[in-house]
Length: 286
Image (cartoon, rainbow, N blue to C red; front, top):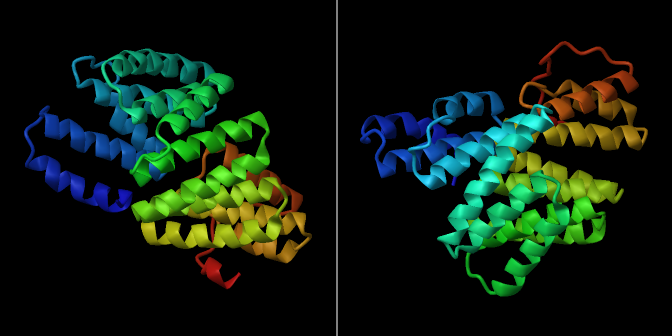
């Protein structure tokens, strides 16, 4: 329910857990999930390294290791390496799905297909899941389903439907009551508004996302909200506001692609940044 609290408590919990037991791997999976959700990719790579060549671990854990290694390479802009690990994960996932009727497993397959840019296959998989499990009771399931459908719709260029499914995913996240995921979902809704050039709605949603991210200790999402708010301010010729927002950003939690956006925007405003530099003022005052 809280990735940051999970990471704080894991060392003590693991110290009293039998190594390589079923419970041990469940806790290790919590660690990987938390690091991924918080965007801490360097720490995630360190956590993955001991398991990359280990084929004796439980299949679900092995699948997470393969998938998350691919996502680390994807974020690092190394597409060939990302595709290699994603294909390994997809092969294992398909083997797993043969022994499991879980719709969550099928959503994971669709997510891998999206990363591999097999958009139509992912979309059809997700639509089939939606039709078969329309009354599925789990908000967590709906959050994942709608988030992946939104991603597929964006890649297909259906931006109005993209916004609709981002909003559906947000409502499901609110039912789960995970502050970090609610923040991410508000961020995704804000980005959908921004892409549609609905800037007032986007600004309001980014502010809400930043509030949840701050409360959840999610620095990556918080910095992304500031970055995209600055982008909106620059677009609206609110140059002073854009400069103030940029001054609040610590670029270290940002992915390389978002650091590039930050530097481009800074250059457009005639600003010079030092790596990682940020101002400690409260963003709520801007």
